[in-house]
Image (tube, rainbow, N blue to C red; front, side, top):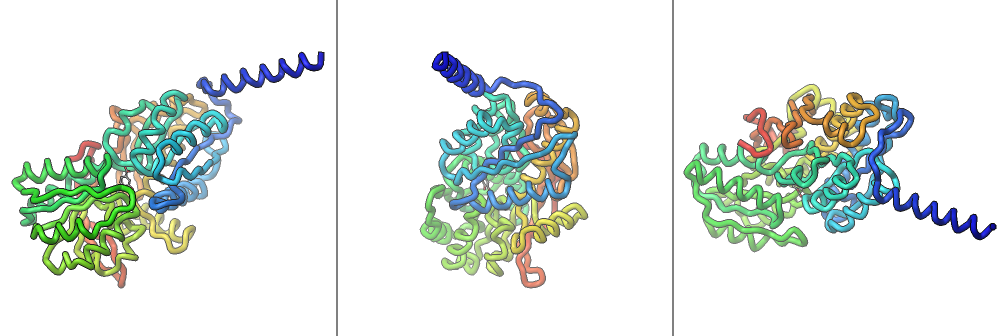
Amino acid sequence: MKSNHASRRRLLQGMAGAAALVALPRAAYAADPVKIGLILPMTGPFASTGKQISAACRLYLQRNGDTVAGRKVELILKDDTGLAPETTKRIAQELVVQDKVTVLAGFGLTPLAFAAAPVATEAKVPMIVMAAGTQVIPQRSPFIVRTGFTLPQTTSPIAGWAAKNRIKRVFTLVTDYAPGLDAEKTFHGKFKELGGEIVESVRTPLRNPDYGPFLQRAKDSKADALFVFVPSGEGLAVMKQFDERGLKQAGMKMIGPGDVVDDDLLESMGASAAGIITSFHYSAAHESPENRAYVDAMTKANPGMRPNFHSVGGWDGMHVIYEALRKAPNGTGEQLVEAMKGMKWTSPRGPMMIDPATRDVVQTIYLREVKIVNGQPWNIEFDKVENVGPGGV
Ligand code: DHB
């Protein structure tokens, strides 16, 4: 009798396990907490992305309360170390099956977002991409909504600026993975269309890059400008070689989307960053009441940290989650994604919209120049293009 009982219990446990693996969607009840599974690189070469986004998400909770639509909000932060897509995928599966998260969020790099997309689709769980910027990402799952940016969006305005500002010949350097190829394709396409010439283009490895030899080639090319895309965390290493090899002294201007002059690293770059011109969706120096309050709160909560563009991807990701829950308090994953489509709000970076067709961001892209203000380098905005969609201008 007793052993029969035990085997039945084991069977039932097995069945419960199998059911959990299928992760059938069900409506949430008012008392259920909202669990946000935040997957970020908290260690490794891209740890600054994780630090910035997790700090912004925590701040959002502090400022907006840890309850929304009567449900308690829990952040479950997991470190995927940034370089292994299989790890990101496994963590996403565990968060869905074991923790039964309401939403998956984070995703510091494109290959990691690609790896998690099928998990979101299978589990019917919204997946908020706060950082990764390759344009095609939201096409990988109908459950993806992006709150960061895309590379075509941030890159196309600088191509227009360069063509209009006596830059005729450009050497391009991008990191050799999907967002780098998006940046390269966008810049080449638009700059050539406007009459510019690409003198040479190089791609640097994502893992352990040595920028020295590439920057020497750039210098030897005698181009008018060097276009750079590297992911957040890499800018300082690029700047160091740009400096050491005397490209600025040789009269070469650095341009690109703003990842290379990331606010997280800009202070460490010091005066040598002055004069770099980029187009981007966020600068910590952006003048608005919302941004002043944001930078102030982020710096107070995280002494020594200047909030960067990835942080606002996290902040706005939390906003989208909160607002979707207000519209559909006990909504299924599908209903939450539906509630996010077409959402409009004012971010520290400016006006935002989630395009209902692509589930991607529409936002203002600013042209900025690094200037030294009160002894520190800042990305100072001098022009803007409004309502830029995920495909750029
Ligand atoms: C990606 C990551 C970054 O840190 C960045 O600045 C741009 C793109 C990415 O992997 O998609």
